[in-house]
Structures are given as C-alpha cells and as structure tokens.
Image (cartoon, rainbow, N blue to C red):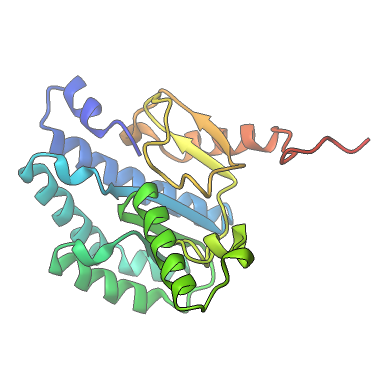
Length: 225
C-alpha cells in the first residue's frame, strides 16, 4: 500500500494526512474484497523497516491502527470478515496489541474474507526465524535434516495456515516487493499501478482482478493442448 506520503506531498499536506486518507482505501478495498468473495486479503501495514521512520510518524501510524481496529469491528462483523495477523506483533505498543487481540477474538468465527494484516513484518526476518526453529528441532532430533522439504519450511512461516497469494498488487509504480512475502510470492502474478494508495479504490481493484483473470498461469509448466 505505497504512496501515502507522495499523495500528501502533491497536495502540500503533512505525511500523516496521506496515511489518514490511505486508511480510507483500506476500508474501501476490504469491503470490496468481501463483496467480490475474495477469500484472503493481505495488507502490508507496517514492516520491520518502518521503525526507522520519524518517531512522530510511527506513533501516528500506531494510533491510526488502534483507531481503525476499534472503529471497524462492527463493519467486520457485518461483512463476515475474520481478522488475522502475520509478523512479530509482540513488539507493537500495548494499546495496539490489546485491540488486535480483541478484534481477532471477536471475528474468529467469521467465515467470509480473511483480512491479514502484516504488522512488524519482514520476509527476511520471517525466513530467518523459521530456519532457527527448524535448526533447533534438528538438534533435538524432532526433525531429521534429510526429511526437510519445502512444506517443512512453509509450516514454520507466519503464513503456515494461509494460502500463498495469487495476485500481488503494488501501488505507486514501485517495481520491488520490499521484503514482502518473499517465499510465498514465488508464483504470484504481479500487478503494478502508478496510482497512489489513497486513490486506489474498488474500481482500481476490479481492474487489477480483471487483468489477473486474463493471465496464463502455468506454474513453470506448459499450457495443456
């Protein structure tokens, strides 16, 4: 969800106003995905690198997240949305962790869209932690090194109970994945748009999905005759 800062700069506004407008896109896209019967939507909300931003901006983002969780509880229940998270959430502020826990518990029985928030998430960090855990299990002989498979690694990632993405949408025209789901995106289709995240709404989502539906996904094989 890239481009909040540039959206604000183009309008001579503080960066935090771009984040506030970006939160409106979060709501619009989440509701659109629920309406379109998308099963999983993962939003890269806060990366392990985002702590490097100015303290004031980080504090605003955390407050915005906490406010969003409180405000959107009823909307999630109304739209049968289940909230999940990936990332090291233990390092988030106490208030955010409290609201996350409440919302996850409240929506746990919902069966529609699963909204996955990537919070304090970094793919390199995720894979490193998975390798350390597997290594410890090898030392204790719970796992045999010769028996390690791709599934073994997948089972030790934050996303172990979440299917790999089919489509990765990157707003603002940036041509990189920015340490996001490196393992899981191996065969995802990429859709890059110059539209900044605060301007990305249902119409733009539908366009991305329509283009995805026209892709020829062969997963390394060939099309059947």
